[in-house]
Image (tube, rainbow, N blue to C red; front, top):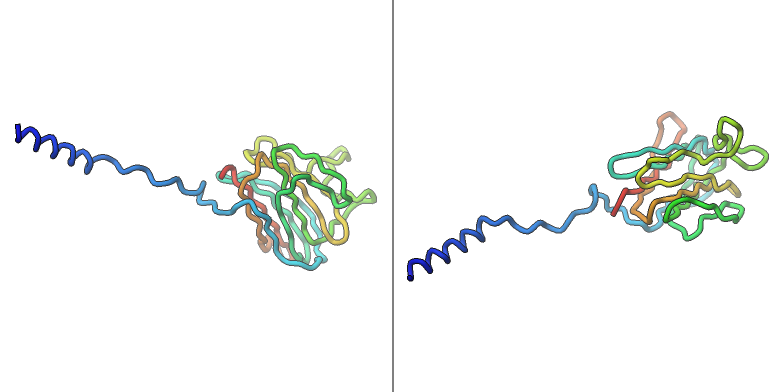
Length: 185
């Protein structure tokens, strides 16, 4: 009887040593540690000119890129309850959250204040980019330019982590404002 008790205890100890460890707490999604608070860089108004807005899909995030020719003084990017154009009108956006991008620069525009790169081939004003099929982005819209600030409003699936940063190039005197929005927390 004593021998059977010892065997049972040894088997239990062996089971504890062989059993896999409990999984560690899940790490951040794709290593992303960005958060969802507003980001900004710079202060004074710039003399640069926004000449394109592009988007891209990546495995962990969707991307918005604003191309600027000339000096770029800075930016501010943040979630807002209601996206507004630079003239104060509300910008209706698809998605559960809204990011507002203020770039401290000018934009060459027509007499109605619409930048030349906003027009579709048929001459009507369109969304800046078609983001159909993106995991996070729902809409990228022009929100005006006034007093040295050009604004882009972005509809996002939900309030998700994002980052904003500047990249030089791809050619001389060009800067890119990059905004990445994670697919999930």
